[in-house]
Length: 418
Ligand SMILES: [Zn+2]
Image (cartoon, rainbow, N blue to C red; front, top):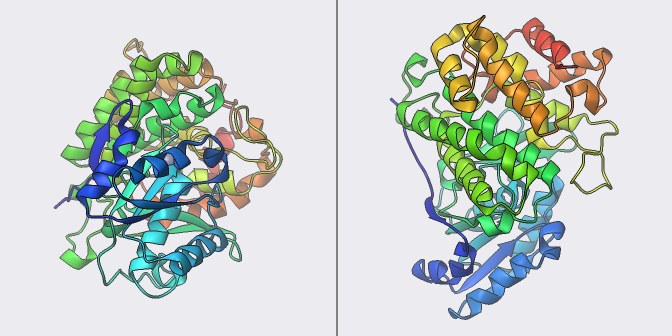
């Protein structure tokens, strides 16, 4: 059995100006707009809040979301929302961090208990919400995360130095408002990294362990990520086709609104796919690669803190991960390579098609040459492996079981890619 869930969707230039109307349809009168300081500085969230007033909605902006949310930053956001509530609806304007923080706020302003009660076990108690949540409108301003479509919220637990999350179907936003105009100012480096996140969402869900291979679950055991399935496949295939056509152009010329629109559509399609199928090895590796960053400062991102952006962290082990998973589903890997790179050379070893297509793309858009170029050396591999092994929820979706040695091999061979 597989299940399929998705938010309602409004897509297109100017769609973010209509949120007041949409909230009115849900009967909302008092709305909290959730964003981070960087996005708030663009004036976008304040504009969204102002536009709601025309529909008789009282809106307030909370702009203290932490980029890469932590348990501490989410608790602060929840405390604020509980003190200033009650709220009828939440609107998240921003990247995955704002949308995920809004999911936690929505959960904990409609249900009692604390953050830790709901975190995935073994870190938290894995409690399911007893009461329905309020409408949540997600307005992504970076093209890629897919957080507007998913049922998870991801955060760092500071004391344990581990990334975990809350996963429940009720966390899924009610409405995704995808306005390509909001991505126009995204710097080329961000478009490149976030775009690789889109590509990997599509590739990982397309090559994920098939839903038919799992033991049958009882209804209450069923999880949102149910493995590759026919509906998710459809979205992933279309997302790959769109990135093949527009990704390089969107990085090269950010004002090309045709390319921007196709990338926003690709991000949405990939989200609608992986939000039900799941992702696997590249995402599992990405958490420690981002989390254990030393002193890397990528182009296009704020310079204060070192970081390996999520999409970049995902992409850098993808060629090696797909070399490893090839034997679990050769046809799917070949098909994915053809979609991602329509000019693919069909000579030689088919297991090399997808890594070759990825490497060609990564070089064209200016990604670093492997995790070595972001500051890691061979002596870091054991710590990275330990971090990957903590992502059991993602490893369970891999089409081929990866041992500690397998993961160490993938990471080591990803130190330099070309
Ligand atoms: Zn991702």
